[in-house]
Image (cartoon, rainbow, N blue to C red; front, top):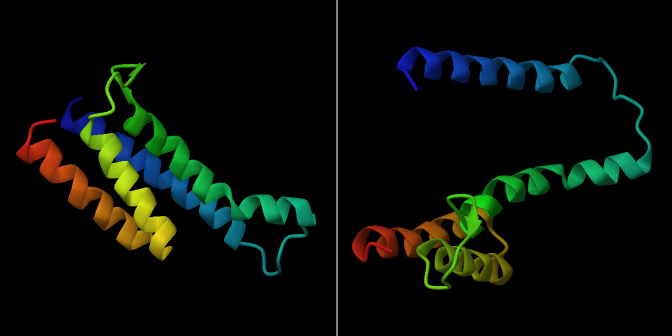
Length: 109
């Protein structure tokens, strides 16, 4: 991908993000929404994050990882353990990367 393509891709993503988020902030009053939709929207960020992270952690070259000794799996397991222990998002990311990076860079997994 050339730098010009990357620039227009980032610009397009920024524009779509601003438009979609700004659309919900434009009305002067809160939009009427059924209670079930309000409850469902609470889980949308988590669902989006899982949809992005899960394929990166569990797949390689379009197929499931063949071995459990993969730096991504061990880092994800450490991050999940931290989250269930402390319930903090920032700590989860830091712990996952603190386990993942030495395995990937140091040991070459």
